Image 1 (spheres, one colour):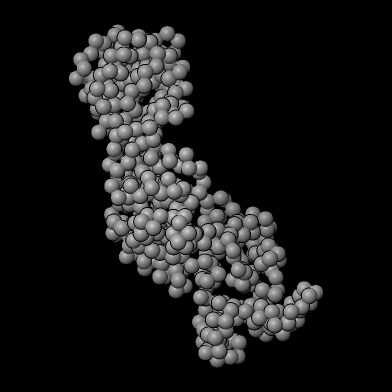
Image 2: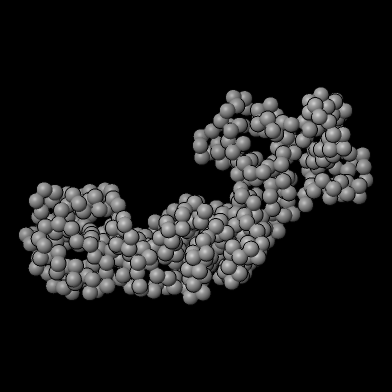
Length: 469
């Protein structure tokens, strides 16, 4: 199909522009005609162009200079050079600079259409290559990136492994910052579509009008500022996976349009009337309670069931505290490598503080804290004093071991003036249990021994304080 190929025609002779536009549009291409090279170069900065046809002899900027600029700034655009003053020398020079083809005037319609067809095939290949290249830069082994030994994260990995090979839509739920996009990428890389594009869009980041154009694309002139046709994310994800983050933020109108694409696997660009078939897998994510949103009639029930074929829930970081040391180690390694930051270590006491913190921002907050420590602290070892104040609150975390009594005494010195003894004791007890679990490498029998209590009593306290649940 040619309607997704946008051809820009540059010629100072109006008759040739009219002939070429009619010829290409009859063949199904989108054609834009310009007679001024300066305008054409400006147009390229603002629009998606797949193929450029330019005359060689023009006043002002020559076709040769246009070719040179396009190959420098837009090397993926094939350029066809036309001239009525053809010679072997000029043809060789144009091909040396990077022209896709060299056509002498007058030309036969079949000759030109064949050249444009070949250039369009190359443009499609370039587009697919760019998408794959961007995807390859972010490729990773999911076992390495989705880090964790906790029961909750192991269940997530098991679901990813089972769901990835299928064609089924997937709904990922969890609090903000829990790593939903990482799971979506792991599903894509484990699927038969792994060599196709992975396209991501955050539904909450754009207003509904912009979001519609981003998802469905638009035709030239469909609204103010639409100076050229543009493909949307659905089309770009053809043959691959489309990840829609914050799906619960879709407006009612967008939900209806999105549902139609899911049902029919076809779409129309904004301002268009041609149906375009798409073959893609949908992975959606949300931090909202969608069943409740359905009950409140904020989210369509039929759309919810279309998305929720496979459901993967990501536990918050406070429910997988045993993974925190592993995540910290990974973030230190990643930031040191990517941002050229010094490689530092977190002391056992600092790790204990991180394990005891509630992490309302989840993994994203943890990574920010690690980066802050690597940037701001001069020493090679990060100590509790180097952490943000809320993570050093002794009421949240008290030591266990030989200095346990002294640690609790020090904590008592810093307790708030308005004391609520049961609440304070509960907080200290929860902190001691977490510290014992961390020191016992989260083996409950060993943690119970450290605390001097039975395993059954420890399990009661875990339930009481919602630790690991």
